[in-house]
Image 1 (cartoon, rainbow, N blue to C red):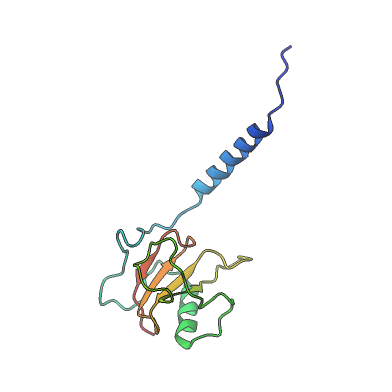
Image 2 (tube, one colour):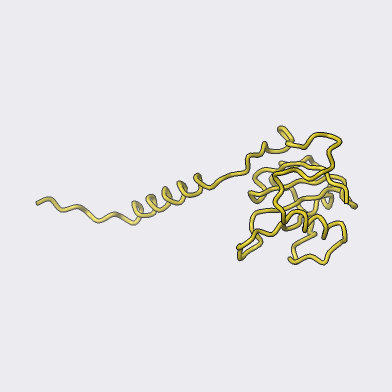
Length: 139
């Protein structure tokens, strides 16, 4: 009878990494086109909110318009645009706000990024800054 050698630690690590990658790859991603290669926007002149925004985004937008108070201390902080997906602007131009995710025990991955003070441009990400959709909104 032939004996099998136990898996080495490296083998176990590789198997776990492959399983985690598979799980990550299966996670639904935003059906967005990354900015600025092609900015996904709603038609110009349409000031209603786009259908891809979750209902919780309305609450976030209302808080932004009122200036708070915000549920998370990180809301309103400068968004650094370190990913370089949004148009290049001076530091301090962009700010980020949490869009609540029902059932999440953390802030989740959904954010609204505003540009300008007061905001003149709005972006939504549902995948923690991997992609953005630009939209218009007037409070």
